[in-house]
Image (cartoon, rainbow, N blue to C red; front, top):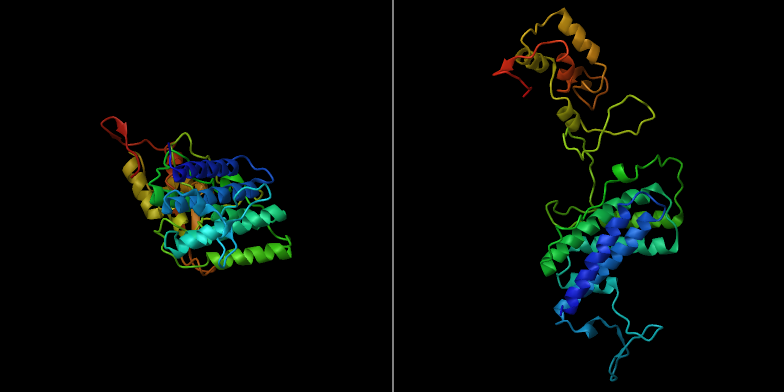
Amino acid sequence: MKARSRELLDRAIAAMVAAIEIYNKPDFSYRAESFAILATNAWELLLKAKWLAEHNNRISCLYVRQGGGTKRKRIKKTAAGNPMTHSLDYLASKLREQGALNEQAYRNLRILSEFRDSAVHFYHQNPQFAERLQEIGAAAVKNFSSAAREWFKAELSRYNFYLLPLAFVSPLQSAEGVILSGEEKRFLKFVNGLSQDDHDPASPYSVAVNVEVRFVKSKSATAAPVRITTDPTAPAVRLTEEQIREKYPWDYAELTKKCQKRYSNFKVDRDYHRLRKSLESDLRYAHVRLLDPAKPNSQKKLFFNPNILQEFDKHYAPKTDGGRAQTPN
Protein backbone atom coordinates (compact mmCIF):
# COMPACT_ATOMS: atom_id res chain seq x y z
CA MET A 1 0.00 0.00 0.00
CA LYS A 2 1.38 3.40 -0.97
CA ALA A 3 2.12 6.02 1.65
CA ARG A 4 -0.29 8.96 1.64
CA SER A 5 2.44 11.28 0.41
CA ARG A 6 3.08 9.07 -2.62
CA GLU A 7 -0.64 8.89 -3.38
CA LEU A 8 -0.84 12.68 -3.36
CA LEU A 9 2.29 12.86 -5.51
CA ASP A 10 0.65 10.61 -8.14
CA ARG A 11 -2.46 12.80 -8.12
CA ALA A 12 -0.34 15.93 -8.39
CA ILE A 13 1.45 14.56 -11.47
CA ALA A 14 -1.88 13.56 -13.00
CA ALA A 15 -3.22 17.09 -12.46
CA MET A 16 -0.16 18.68 -14.07
CA VAL A 17 -0.34 16.31 -17.05
CA ALA A 18 -4.00 17.33 -17.46
CA ALA A 19 -3.06 21.02 -17.28
CA ILE A 20 -0.39 20.59 -19.97
CA GLU A 21 -2.74 18.56 -22.18
CA ILE A 22 -5.38 21.28 -21.93
CA TYR A 23 -2.90 24.02 -22.78
CA ASN A 24 -1.42 22.17 -25.74
CA LYS A 25 -4.77 21.55 -27.41
CA PRO A 26 -5.92 23.74 -30.32
CA ASP A 27 -6.91 27.19 -29.15
CA PHE A 28 -10.17 27.75 -27.31
CA SER A 29 -11.37 30.72 -25.30
CA TYR A 30 -10.80 29.35 -21.78
CA ARG A 31 -7.52 27.52 -22.31
CA ALA A 32 -5.22 29.80 -20.29
CA GLU A 33 -7.62 29.94 -17.36
CA SER A 34 -8.13 26.15 -17.40
CA PHE A 35 -4.37 25.60 -17.35
CA ALA A 36 -3.91 27.99 -14.42
CA ILE A 37 -6.63 26.25 -12.39
CA LEU A 38 -5.29 22.73 -13.01
CA ALA A 39 -1.62 23.69 -12.60
CA THR A 40 -2.36 25.41 -9.29
CA ASN A 41 -4.23 22.31 -8.14
CA ALA A 42 -1.25 20.15 -9.14
CA TRP A 43 1.11 22.31 -7.11
CA GLU A 44 -1.17 22.28 -4.06
CA LEU A 45 -1.24 18.47 -4.14
CA LEU A 46 2.55 18.36 -4.52
CA LEU A 47 3.03 20.68 -1.54
CA LYS A 48 0.64 18.58 0.55
CA ALA A 49 2.57 15.45 -0.41
CA LYS A 50 5.79 17.13 0.74
CA TRP A 51 4.15 18.31 3.98
CA LEU A 52 2.90 14.79 4.69
CA ALA A 53 6.36 13.35 4.03
CA GLU A 54 7.82 15.87 6.49
CA HIS A 55 5.31 14.80 9.16
CA ASN A 56 5.52 11.00 8.96
CA ASN A 57 2.43 10.80 6.72
CA ARG A 58 0.10 11.90 9.53
CA ILE A 59 -2.97 13.14 7.70
CA SER A 60 -3.87 15.39 10.63
CA CYS A 61 -0.88 17.63 9.82
CA LEU A 62 -2.86 18.95 6.85
CA TYR A 63 -5.88 19.99 8.90
CA VAL A 64 -6.59 23.62 9.78
CA ARG A 65 -7.19 24.08 13.51
CA GLN A 66 -8.99 26.86 15.30
CA GLY A 67 -9.38 28.01 18.88
CA GLY A 68 -6.62 28.48 21.42
CA GLY A 69 -5.81 29.49 24.90
CA THR A 70 -6.27 26.75 27.47
CA LYS A 71 -8.66 24.86 25.23
CA ARG A 72 -7.41 22.27 22.77
CA LYS A 73 -7.55 23.55 19.21
CA ARG A 74 -10.35 22.05 17.19
CA ILE A 75 -10.22 21.01 13.55
CA LYS A 76 -11.96 23.55 11.38
CA LYS A 77 -14.72 22.02 9.25
CA THR A 78 -16.06 22.79 5.80
CA ALA A 79 -19.73 23.45 5.11
CA ALA A 80 -20.12 19.71 4.47
CA GLY A 81 -18.57 18.89 7.84
CA ASN A 82 -15.24 17.60 6.46
CA PRO A 83 -11.84 18.66 7.87
CA MET A 84 -10.54 21.81 6.18
CA THR A 85 -6.97 21.42 4.88
CA HIS A 86 -4.22 23.99 4.61
CA SER A 87 -4.15 26.15 1.49
CA LEU A 88 -1.47 26.32 -1.16
CA ASP A 89 -0.39 29.74 0.15
CA TYR A 90 0.06 28.46 3.70
CA LEU A 91 2.05 25.37 2.69
CA ALA A 92 4.19 27.26 0.18
CA SER A 93 5.03 29.89 2.81
CA LYS A 94 5.91 27.26 5.45
CA LEU A 95 8.07 25.20 3.12
CA ARG A 96 9.80 28.33 1.89
CA GLU A 97 10.58 29.34 5.50
CA GLN A 98 12.08 25.90 6.08
CA GLY A 99 14.22 26.21 2.95
CA ALA A 100 12.49 23.28 1.27
CA LEU A 101 10.76 25.36 -1.41
CA ASN A 102 13.02 27.36 -3.73
CA GLU A 103 12.50 31.14 -3.70
CA GLN A 104 12.02 31.32 -7.48
CA ALA A 105 9.42 28.57 -7.35
CA TYR A 106 7.67 30.35 -4.47
CA ARG A 107 7.39 33.60 -6.45
CA ASN A 108 6.17 31.74 -9.51
CA LEU A 109 3.48 30.06 -7.40
CA ARG A 110 2.29 33.39 -6.06
CA ILE A 111 1.80 34.65 -9.61
CA LEU A 112 0.16 31.45 -10.81
CA SER A 113 -2.19 31.45 -7.81
CA GLU A 114 -3.10 35.10 -8.40
CA PHE A 115 -3.82 34.38 -12.06
CA ARG A 116 -6.01 31.43 -11.03
CA ASP A 117 -7.96 33.60 -8.58
CA SER A 118 -8.33 36.40 -11.12
CA ALA A 119 -9.43 33.97 -13.84
CA VAL A 120 -12.18 32.59 -11.62
CA HIS A 121 -13.59 36.04 -10.89
CA PHE A 122 -13.28 37.88 -14.20
CA TYR A 123 -12.42 37.20 -17.81
CA HIS A 124 -8.96 38.01 -19.22
CA GLN A 125 -9.29 39.11 -22.84
CA ASN A 126 -6.06 41.05 -23.31
CA PRO A 127 -3.40 39.29 -25.47
CA GLN A 128 -0.72 40.24 -22.94
CA PHE A 129 -2.16 37.65 -20.57
CA ALA A 130 -1.57 34.82 -23.04
CA GLU A 131 2.06 35.87 -23.45
CA ARG A 132 2.69 36.28 -19.72
CA LEU A 133 0.94 33.02 -18.87
CA GLN A 134 3.17 31.22 -21.37
CA GLU A 135 6.21 32.48 -19.47
CA ILE A 136 4.75 31.86 -16.01
CA GLY A 137 3.19 28.52 -16.98
CA ALA A 138 6.39 27.19 -18.54
CA ALA A 139 8.25 28.05 -15.32
CA ALA A 140 5.51 26.41 -13.20
CA VAL A 141 5.88 23.16 -15.15
CA LYS A 142 9.67 23.30 -14.98
CA ASN A 143 9.61 24.02 -11.23
CA PHE A 144 7.08 21.25 -10.60
CA SER A 145 9.29 18.71 -12.33
CA SER A 146 12.36 19.92 -10.41
CA ALA A 147 10.60 19.84 -7.03
CA ALA A 148 9.11 16.38 -7.63
CA ARG A 149 12.56 15.09 -8.54
CA GLU A 150 14.24 16.81 -5.58
CA TRP A 151 11.65 15.85 -2.96
CA PHE A 152 10.58 12.40 -4.10
CA LYS A 153 13.18 11.39 -6.69
CA ALA A 154 10.26 11.20 -9.12
CA GLU A 155 11.36 10.64 -12.71
CA LEU A 156 8.97 12.45 -15.04
CA SER A 157 10.85 11.93 -18.30
CA ARG A 158 8.11 9.65 -19.62
CA TYR A 159 5.74 12.61 -19.66
CA ASN A 160 5.92 15.41 -22.22
CA PHE A 161 6.36 18.10 -19.60
CA TYR A 162 6.40 21.19 -21.79
CA LEU A 163 4.07 23.86 -23.09
CA LEU A 164 4.04 24.50 -26.82
CA PRO A 165 5.46 27.95 -27.70
CA LEU A 166 2.93 30.66 -28.46
CA ALA A 167 4.39 31.07 -31.95
CA PHE A 168 3.07 27.60 -32.83
CA VAL A 169 -0.01 27.42 -30.64
CA SER A 170 -1.63 30.81 -30.64
CA PRO A 171 0.23 33.57 -32.52
CA LEU A 172 -0.26 36.93 -30.87
CA GLN A 173 -2.11 39.50 -32.88
CA SER A 174 -1.43 43.21 -32.65
CA ALA A 175 -2.26 44.58 -29.20
CA GLU A 176 -2.55 48.18 -30.40
CA GLY A 177 -5.71 49.87 -29.23
CA VAL A 178 -6.41 47.34 -26.47
CA ILE A 179 -7.44 49.07 -23.25
CA LEU A 180 -6.54 47.41 -19.97
CA SER A 181 -9.09 47.42 -17.18
CA GLY A 182 -8.05 48.45 -13.68
CA GLU A 183 -7.96 44.81 -12.57
CA GLU A 184 -5.79 43.82 -15.53
CA LYS A 185 -3.33 46.68 -14.94
CA ARG A 186 -2.94 45.76 -11.27
CA PHE A 187 -2.45 42.09 -12.11
CA LEU A 188 0.28 42.77 -14.70
CA LYS A 189 2.01 45.15 -12.26
CA PHE A 190 1.94 42.37 -9.65
CA VAL A 191 3.40 39.86 -12.12
CA ASN A 192 6.15 42.21 -13.29
CA GLY A 193 7.10 43.04 -9.71
CA LEU A 194 7.64 39.41 -8.75
CA SER A 195 9.30 38.30 -11.97
CA GLN A 196 12.04 40.96 -12.03
CA ASP A 197 15.16 39.49 -10.47
CA ASP A 198 18.66 38.29 -11.31
CA HIS A 199 18.51 34.60 -10.53
CA ASP A 200 20.99 32.04 -11.80
CA PRO A 201 19.94 30.97 -15.35
CA ALA A 202 21.42 27.52 -14.66
CA SER A 203 19.05 26.98 -11.72
CA PRO A 204 16.38 24.28 -12.11
CA TYR A 205 13.84 26.82 -10.80
CA SER A 206 12.52 30.02 -12.41
CA VAL A 207 9.93 32.71 -11.80
CA ALA A 208 9.25 32.94 -15.53
CA VAL A 209 10.70 31.32 -18.64
CA ASN A 210 11.31 33.29 -21.83
CA VAL A 211 10.50 31.19 -24.86
CA GLU A 212 12.70 31.83 -27.90
CA VAL A 213 11.62 30.38 -31.24
CA ARG A 214 14.50 29.81 -33.65
CA PHE A 215 14.39 28.37 -37.14
CA VAL A 216 17.12 25.93 -38.10
CA LYS A 217 17.60 23.82 -41.18
CA SER A 218 16.43 20.29 -40.49
CA LYS A 219 15.73 17.13 -42.49
CA SER A 220 13.45 15.76 -39.77
CA ALA A 221 10.03 14.70 -40.99
CA THR A 222 8.51 16.28 -37.86
CA ALA A 223 10.15 19.69 -38.36
CA ALA A 224 7.77 22.61 -38.82
CA PRO A 225 7.97 23.98 -42.38
CA VAL A 226 8.86 27.67 -42.61
CA ARG A 227 9.06 29.77 -45.74
CA ILE A 228 10.69 33.18 -46.11
CA THR A 229 8.47 35.60 -47.97
CA THR A 230 8.16 39.28 -48.79
CA ASP A 231 4.38 39.09 -48.38
CA PRO A 232 3.49 42.07 -46.13
CA THR A 233 0.43 40.21 -44.78
CA ALA A 234 2.47 37.24 -43.51
CA PRO A 235 3.18 36.98 -39.75
CA ALA A 236 6.41 38.77 -38.85
CA VAL A 237 9.34 36.81 -37.43
CA ARG A 238 12.13 39.05 -36.18
CA LEU A 239 15.69 37.73 -36.11
CA THR A 240 18.54 39.11 -34.02
CA GLU A 241 21.78 40.18 -35.69
CA GLU A 242 23.41 37.02 -34.37
CA GLN A 243 20.70 34.84 -35.89
CA ILE A 244 20.94 36.69 -39.22
CA ARG A 245 24.69 36.10 -39.25
CA GLU A 246 24.10 32.40 -38.61
CA LYS A 247 21.55 32.20 -41.41
CA TYR A 248 23.68 34.13 -43.93
CA PRO A 249 27.29 33.19 -43.03
CA TRP A 250 29.05 33.79 -46.40
CA ASP A 251 30.19 37.06 -47.87
CA TYR A 252 31.10 37.43 -51.58
CA ALA A 253 34.66 36.12 -51.13
CA GLU A 254 33.52 33.05 -49.18
CA LEU A 255 30.75 32.27 -51.67
CA THR A 256 33.20 32.49 -54.54
CA LYS A 257 35.64 30.19 -52.76
CA LYS A 258 32.85 27.64 -52.16
CA CYS A 259 31.93 27.71 -55.85
CA GLN A 260 35.54 27.22 -56.94
CA LYS A 261 35.82 24.23 -54.67
CA ARG A 262 32.46 22.77 -55.65
CA TYR A 263 32.33 23.11 -59.46
CA SER A 264 34.64 21.85 -62.18
CA ASN A 265 33.70 24.45 -64.81
CA PHE A 266 33.33 27.47 -62.53
CA LYS A 267 34.85 30.81 -63.55
CA VAL A 268 34.62 34.23 -61.92
CA ASP A 269 33.27 35.91 -65.02
CA ARG A 270 30.31 37.88 -66.32
CA ASP A 271 28.00 34.84 -66.23
CA TYR A 272 28.79 34.20 -62.57
CA HIS A 273 28.15 37.83 -61.62
CA ARG A 274 24.91 37.93 -63.61
CA LEU A 275 23.60 34.75 -61.98
CA ARG A 276 24.62 35.83 -58.49
CA LYS A 277 23.05 39.26 -58.84
CA SER A 278 19.79 37.74 -60.05
CA LEU A 279 19.53 35.87 -56.73
CA GLU A 280 20.57 38.69 -54.40
CA SER A 281 17.04 40.05 -54.02
CA ASP A 282 15.70 36.66 -52.86
CA LEU A 283 15.73 36.37 -49.05
CA ARG A 284 16.15 32.62 -49.34
CA TYR A 285 19.64 33.18 -50.69
CA ALA A 286 20.92 36.61 -49.68
CA HIS A 287 20.56 39.36 -47.10
CA VAL A 288 21.89 42.92 -46.97
CA ARG A 289 23.32 43.62 -43.52
CA LEU A 290 24.37 46.92 -42.02
CA LEU A 291 27.98 46.85 -40.90
CA ASP A 292 26.86 48.86 -37.86
CA PRO A 293 23.26 47.81 -37.03
CA ALA A 294 22.93 50.72 -34.60
CA LYS A 295 23.44 53.22 -37.46
CA PRO A 296 20.82 53.01 -40.26
CA ASN A 297 23.07 55.04 -42.59
CA SER A 298 26.17 52.91 -42.11
CA GLN A 299 27.76 50.94 -44.95
CA LYS A 300 26.02 47.78 -46.13
CA LYS A 301 27.39 44.39 -47.04
CA LEU A 302 25.76 41.44 -48.76
CA PHE A 303 25.78 37.99 -47.15
CA PHE A 304 24.64 34.67 -48.59
CA ASN A 305 22.81 31.60 -47.38
CA PRO A 306 24.37 28.24 -48.39
CA ASN A 307 21.08 27.37 -50.10
CA ILE A 308 22.18 29.57 -52.97
CA LEU A 309 24.36 26.69 -54.18
CA GLN A 310 21.20 24.82 -55.12
CA GLU A 311 20.66 27.42 -57.83
CA PHE A 312 24.30 27.35 -58.92
CA ASP A 313 24.02 23.55 -59.23
CA LYS A 314 21.67 24.14 -62.14
CA HIS A 315 24.33 26.04 -64.08
CA TYR A 316 27.65 24.45 -63.11
CA ALA A 317 29.02 20.91 -63.11
CA PRO A 318 29.98 19.67 -59.64
CA LYS A 319 33.42 18.25 -59.00
CA THR A 320 33.46 14.59 -58.09
CA ASP A 321 35.46 12.72 -55.50
CA GLY A 322 35.40 9.01 -56.19
CA GLY A 323 32.23 9.34 -58.21
CA ARG A 324 30.47 11.44 -55.52
CA ALA A 325 29.64 15.08 -55.88
CA GLN A 326 31.25 17.36 -53.32
CA THR A 327 29.06 19.08 -50.73
CA PRO A 328 29.70 22.51 -49.22
CA ASN A 329 31.52 22.64 -45.86
